[in-house]
Length: 412
Length: 218
Figure 1: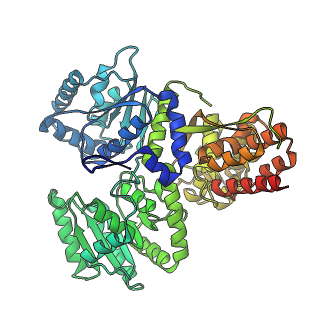
Figure 2: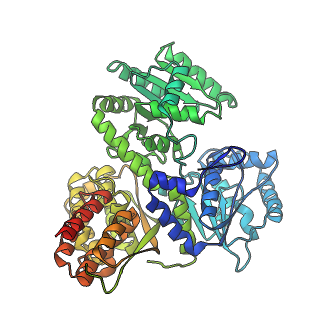
Figure 3: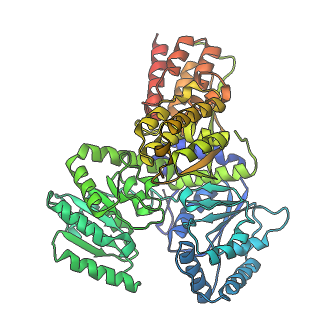
């Protein structure tokens, strides 16, 4: 870790070596060697907030340290553009689309504006998500390799929105999806690129036990009794009421506590309603801790996860579910719904336990509380699973492999 | 200490997963996929799956076996598929033939079961690999031991497991070099007998190091 004159701690590639083993980092350097000096341009729609920006914030410096010349550009647009792209996002996830027909023209106009502003001349251009997808119009004969990274579930898109976007997508050299389930039948190659977490970030790094203890004390949580935790914004799709019901069943057998921690209630009217419903359903149980945390609570969330006996993710629908990745990385026995990208992470009876109902969730929690040795084994294997597939270093390796593959380099 | 005529040059392999447009939603469709998917797909779901889940020593000998168990709830068929030892194969075509035969026999004997929809689809994927030299080489047994300890999981998998297909021999890169360059045929055989199904990469590496130590002490 490098400390700047301003006291800012900068994470270096070698810091991952201390955590993952020197050989892993040495290998990344060996794979990157033929790509030294090659240019990469990443383009997305936001510099802060959201999973994509979080990944790029770490990925770009890692690739740069490996010798690639990486530029990260963020597209600009007015409120009208982002309202349309939010509607696109929901529609591509299978929701309704009720924007006026001219919304497609507005989308294209903003893409054209960005096309004029951005360089888009790198050897590898990676466009993230639908918002900048029409930048492909800038592609010229003999230009670099264009890749579309789709972070959303495209398995059941709204037909009108998809039929508008598909011709742009098909002009890329390839598309990257977070799971085979999220992909579509396309005439261009599709590759599997898991999302990832940074093991050295505030959300995931190891914490001093004293700090963890102070967070528990702050929230009046008893460190001596089992703690069940779900970290999620207050959203019906995360089923906080279902988690509460599962806890109430478990409570008949074990003297445990529940933490439901997340944000979103302040800036999302529905989040506020859900939060209130959960509070009412908890009926003042002093062992239920409902924590509406601000967005800058990464360390507190990390501490709550590290202090937990079991982590739950009882979503009704889910994207990839990076909160599950975080739990597994912390070696926590995890009980989660078999939806979205969760079964890729929680391999039933190997890296955690899957459930399909409130009763099933409660049963799996009881099973783990009764069998701590099995819980420990699942936690350890879950950690290994994340180490192998879902860390920022694995993500960097995948990009390097993709670039080498596109250059037709030393194929097996 | 004997010096090899040719050094062992360690490389690593790095893989990209290509998602195919083919999927199976019952056992008949699995069989159809087994017959028509690419060799890279058979490699991905067998040789590669063993490497991807090297830290698990139960289940996951192949993606096919795991899916048949978890998504189709057919444990006997899953066991048959899992029992195929990839070390017995030096060509993907032979492995494909045996996978197809097992699934085909099951489908013929239990057509109703084979038509039942799975809990989730099986997606046929492919492994696309590139290699990179690690700049590590061994000229004698001591250097070999030191390098083995430093190897990443991916490099170990490349030399010890997927090498069989490349060599088209029932051995691995390490054993071949030890026998051909250092004349250590007995050690080569002992390494080749290490069970990659019941060991993780770490325990397999530790076994190799222990065997080499024994040889060095002799």
